[in-house]
Length: 287
Image 1: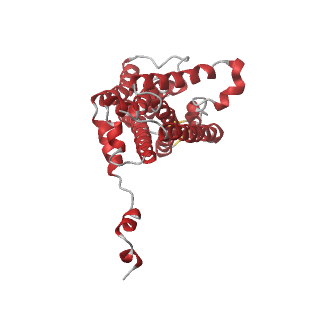
Image 2: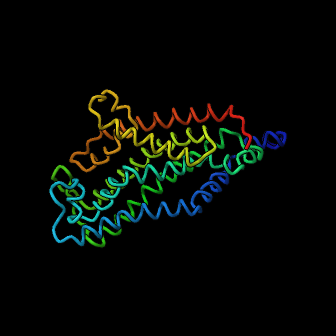
Image 3: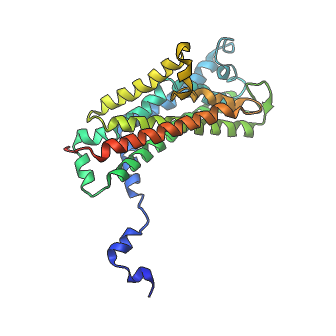
């Protein structure tokens, strides 16, 4: 008879693999809410609007347009990058803020948080599942824009070789891989914003307030990043390296900005998740 069979029932239960049922349930809750579905629809509509607008214009975008916009008519892949550039200012942070702000505050507002903790569910596990759902949503939202942008872009403008921002050309497959890499990078950056939203969500029982505060946090970071008088602060701002995904479209790829962006994103994610745990672990849950 094995040691596992001789162990008491409680010990055997303790070594069972953790179930993903809780995470699956949380994802179903997030993805079935009408407001979240509507938000994803808005995100997906932007690359379609960009592609149709550029296609309906007789001449190419003006010389004052962003680099990605100037390249749309040459290769449909740039529709995705143009849409990500536009939505990174407000729409994507707002979508992540809505999910993260609702994570704990929404449960408290509905009066279901106390029941979740009496199932029983450990508070650290609850936070971990909530944050995992936020990270998955950040990737889903970003790649939804990317996929829709590529589909409409290739349909209207075609593919072929990709001209990088450095002026050299790479194959379509290499360009596609760089688009995926840029989308994954932005997803990680937005996941760090989700950690900020999760922390704010533990401070209030009003999900709208948590959402607004998270958006204000990201907007303030953008504003501070544009003020030269506080240049010493820029490398530490959450949003400072977000546009570094454009460096993936240079020859050779400039990794410095993206790597620094990942370091900052990881730091924000760890610090604010730890702050959320410190706040939530000792919080008196009454609703």
